[in-house]
Image (cartoon, rainbow, N blue to C red):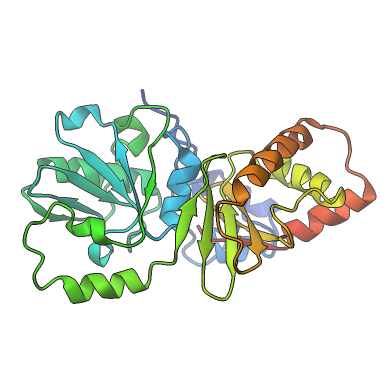
Length: 309
């Protein structure tokens, strides 16, 4: 079933009412002067919540922006009996690959951006299903057409996080000549684990630090209020000596980030993450006005946001 395209066109933006240093009303997270107020403006179509309506929306955002090596099968009725696999990253960041095995691999982390990643993905997927084995990509904006939400069915994805990129050659018999490139790619893959007790929460070890990065589906204002309530109450820790240090904003969603002491690991976070999710749900249900302390906490959290997309 087709999903509503939540797009905002330049002619519908209240340009005369927006100061140059204010957030652009398109929702990009950028200041107006750097977005639709810039010379030439932003792309005509901006989709605030890119992957809304897709199964496991938060995991898709995580795989596109935060997770180095992961895969998830997609249910695509138009593919017939050809398996379609969503991949965080493909070799050389190509958009898609039609495999000799009959599988189609669809890459999330790509180098192009034509305004609506979901439409780009749908265009690439459609081409890959019709292509001979090999690389499939986009060299120009796909134009009008379906979005990925129009092609994929189901309610959730079965995400597998890999230690590296060996899955690139999982269906290849002769891997001679690929070893060096694969080893180089694997060296760039930071250890990552998806928690099983909650949705779309990923532990990672970047060497000098460990983090928990958790993509959440709630609207930004409501989530910030709830996180501020928990912070003011001292309930925002996710593990011993952990600290909520800020959050990413990507594709219309927020991903709070916790710093963790080195050596924490992913396993010990399972119970505390589940407990935090319960506390967060209660805080989200609280619609009372924020106290002075909570407003200060909210302001601090809002100032520690980094917009990725």
